[in-house]
Each structure stands twice: as C-alpha cells, then as structure tokens.
Image 1 (cartoon, rainbow, N blue to C red):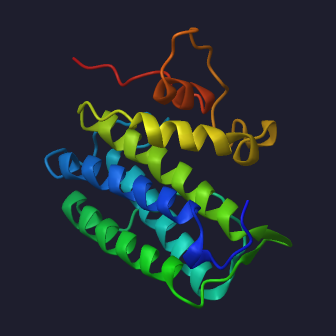
Image 2: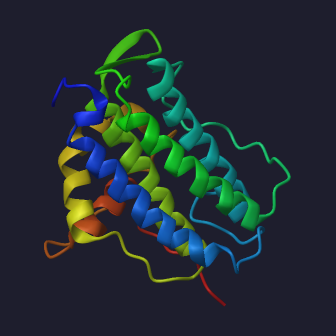
Length: 201
C-alpha cells in the first residue's frame, strides 16, 4: 500500500474505474420509477440513489479536509429529488470527487474516526462501495450490468483489508458460497452477500 499523496496513488485509477462502471448503470435508472425495489433490503431505487449521493459527498469531503468522522454508509434520508435529479447530482459529485482526489492538496494519510488511514486504502474502500452500488442500481433497473472481470479481480485483492467479520451484517451481508468455476464478479458479489437477484414478474 502506497503512502504517496492521494493524487499519485494507483488506487485512484481503481476509484475512477468504479465510478465509470457505476455511471453506466445510472443511465438505465433514468427510465425506472423511484419506488422500484433494490437488492438492499427495504430500500427503493430512490433510497439507494440518496445513499450513493451521501457516500460520494463523504469521500469528496475527506480529500478536501483530510479526514471524516467515520467511513460508514450514511443513513438514508430522502431529499425529495426525483430519480433524474439524483442521477444528475451523482454525475456532478463523481466529477468533483475525482478532482478532489487528484488535487495537489489531497493528503497521503486520512483521519477516520480516531485513527489514521492510508489514502490508498480509503480510495479502494470507496471504489468497492461505488462498484457494489453500481451493481445494485443495475439490478434495480433490470439491466444486465456485470462488474467487469478486471475490476472485480482488483477489488478482490483489496477485500482482506476492507471487509472483516465486524462489517457483517451492518455494511455487508453474510458471505455466500460459490462454485469452483465462479468468475471474479460472482466471487466479489458473494463475498459481500450479494448473490440474490431481484425477482421479476
């Protein structure tokens, strides 16, 4: 794990790829009602988009001020925005986030709660969060949008540093079994308890 300033980290490319994957998924959301169900228990598409906006804002602010209270998914509080407004806001925040992380002032260490965390680890945690929710959006929209193999493989390499038993069931569901021939994207989703698709009529 590098301790270089955030703007020079290899994990920044991982974060950018995660955002690119998720932005494609968001295009399909423009034609889906806000009350559509998602893979996140009890959350509608509107809830999920609200949560994603809060997460991106948290990561953006972290790069600007050098820390956050906790890197933990914010609670869902509906802001009254329509789906297309949420998607537009997400696109704008994604661009702002990348600008903040590539800026010269982005630090090499962050304060998260009462501890220090290397910038690369926080960037990879953000990439994991963004990728998983991109998949969630695709599922809510009924679109076939698998996580690219290379992105899934890279995220799996960081998984031991990002996912612990203490994260379950609050942040991730129980890990699910996979077959010996499972692809990287299936392994990644199973690791975080995302093996079930939304039933379609």
